[in-house]
Image 1 (cartoon, rainbow, N blue to C red):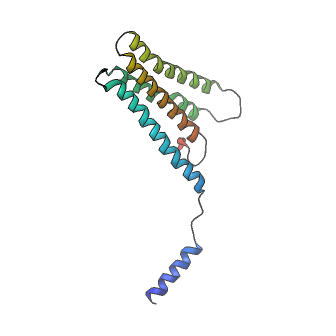
Image 2: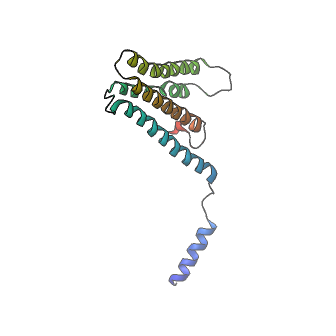
Length: 158
């Protein structure tokens, strides 16, 4: 058996036993979504850091908002794991999760305003931090909109 004939046979085998075709449009959408979400998170954290670290502000109290960023998706994630996904219009566990998430998000927007009113941080820093809040929470919401369905790329598999 020559080397060339082995190569030809292997190519024939590979061409006849290909892997199943993947949906490249869906994969491209997921790839672009991941890049967009990571870019949004980086921009939001940049605004938060600018509100803390610029020499005119130089106060790091707004970094407590990182706890709110971590806590905000937890109630919804827990409710998605606990409750079966039915077609009912309302579910007590999901409603409670949305209520708790809303409380966390409102608290994250209220804390910098309270800091600014108490003269702990400057109003310019408050504006930067609130801009960062908008971007970060939009990124978190975008994550759940993109990966919230029960398909192959669902966040529940993580």
